Image (tube, rainbow, N blue to C red; front, side, top):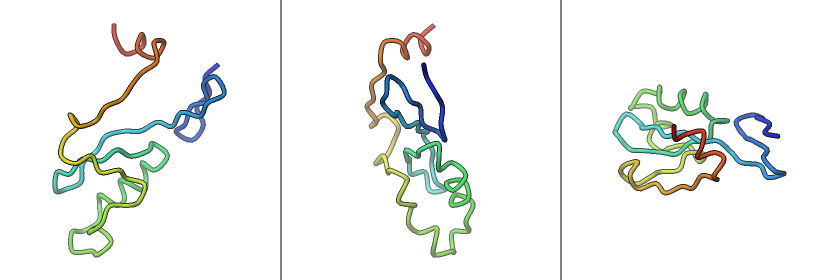
Length: 84
């Protein structure tokens, strides 16, 4: 049984957090946990002159250039959902 809980999924007794890819206004790519989506969108909406916008939030993981630098794995059952 899979249970979604605040952007996380409990699968086989293991909590699997869900993430999304996003960019800031300068084109930097980040991986952000779904649970922080609202905070992320607020940060992205800050004016560039606002000092709070100068550093990404701690919950955002800088990718380093582009989504092609990300490696991930899917279990076989998840892969079946993605590949049709």
